[in-house]
Length: 455
Image 1 (cartoon, rainbow, N blue to C red):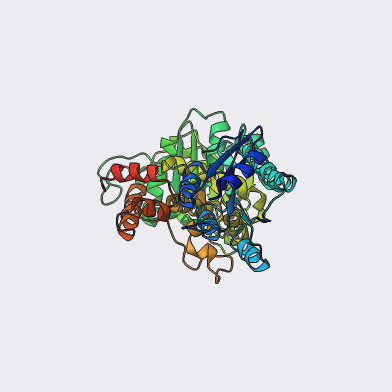
Image 2 (cartoon, one colour):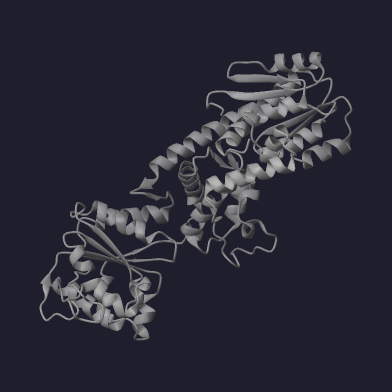
């Protein structure tokens, strides 16, 4: 992988004199100039070294410059490719640009023109390196208790957490599904005076209605069929800490009544018991529902709503804080490249654009699933549009998935083994061809063949 201090330039020309002329003109401090007289060898260098700039002659034996351009763009669209030819035509120039070339130079090339045109690409590559470093520093500086954001909306959320955490007894977190309400709850716990106590979470919508009160407040032996022993509830388990009640808007009327009493008196009564037990618990409740509407239609107690909403934190949807998207992408790329033990660095510009066009109805959780899927699917160090779920790049996609796809059920190891075996089968066992199909170097392919016992 390239270091941040150098820019690599690969020059490809089957004419040794032309190769020496171009490479000599471009050699300077901070630029590593590589050369190749063979397009196949040049492609191997692209796969293994990943130069930022490639200059290639158009007419070469075996594989011409246009074919080499297509292979490089398929492998990594961020590599800047320049075609050189002594047989200039408007048609070939237009075709080269359409296929992804960034420039088209007519031979013989003057040294001044060559240095100026390629120098601008080298400077652009340096700027991208600096931008990548700054983005990483920005990501590190824009994390608050595990929450990523730099938008004004998220800075307001962070500010409220800081102000609320030292003092709260109850907090209500509202926001759409997938916005990260659980992360807000955990941040409140870490910053509050009882951070050494337990953080206990209960998803109220995931518990069978008849068992919700027992889960919250516990039960005594014989309280109902199956209650063979006394069992403390979540409130008692969270004594001295924080209880997080997710989807509190789905609570039954009976559980709401008991929750209100527990919050008011800091005591609970186990199901089937006549006595109460004192507890010291801070409660963070969360919901994606509009509790004011539920109060209006009578499905949520008004007194409980006001008890919970004395302090409220609203978590904005991702579509309202799109400026956080690049940071979140980088965060999830780093997370899943480590999880899958893959060297995935970034997304291509067109993959960025595909994500930026989406309106993210599933919010940050949907973005995490998309990036995790892409990290698993990519065969290179860069995520391109082909690695994204189909619904994000389909022409019929209008801002939201018709049926949300989850990542492949295979483990990464199984998926990798299948891809390598399939490439070897389709190439008739030709490792060079299989490596090209997979967009990896031959050495990397040999290692993976040995790793998966495919040799």
